Length: 320
Image 1 (cartoon, rainbow, N blue to C red):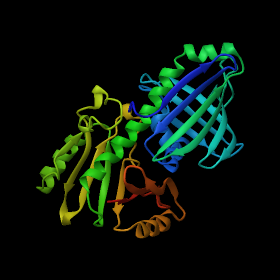
Image 2: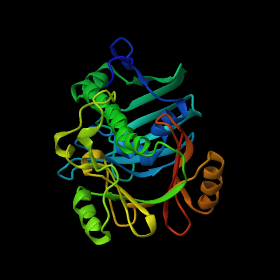
Image 3: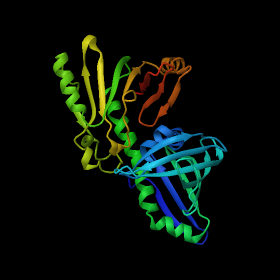
Image 4: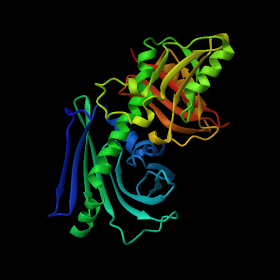
């Protein structure tokens, strides 16, 4: 994490709370979306090597997020968060608990009452978090279980996920010329697949192969895990008719669970935000929005969806 960004972690045993202040190099809408959208939460909420999988999420007052954290060995720890009060892009509270797969609370484990407040501080967003516990015993139990270490890692996961997904796309397309691409995800064998496609189409990679280890050292994010350093962060290959195949590795270490059908998107890059919104809104009719179209701090107007026929789309306008 960038040492210039505020990160305070204070344990207050007098009122049984953990108080965290965490700054992000982003706007409120992006940070809020990361905390309230299941597809994004699944990518960062669990500390590595665990991954998060959402079972269901109803983000509204009285709604519940039911999910589990899974270890590399396949052990699952089920949790739920019952949302109490929500003020859009300002704050939300929720009562978290360990539970079973049906949401029945494990009364042997502490419950956490989260209060998360979001505020804009210049070009940064500050998230002020209070984790309240019923007793000092409960507070000391979660601290002993590694609350600080796990929570710190989870937020670093969010930083790294955003960096890995969007940094290079901004670098490799410095203009807003319209184009259509196919965006592919692989579980770790992107290079093998694209060497095969290269031999088939007799073309060459655009700007070579960029790997996770190539993320700039001053990117304000933690070091990339050794296991994924040599994996492909981004690659582009022109095929028949000038169509572009783009891809990245999406290994379990980054929180991904790939299945046939969710590993490919058609990526549309219109020239203007207005055209992007028109295309996005029409494709989303009767479908499911996985990431609402919005200005992103990484310099793009971006959104993703699955249309009513089950086809995955990304809409992206690079802001230059």
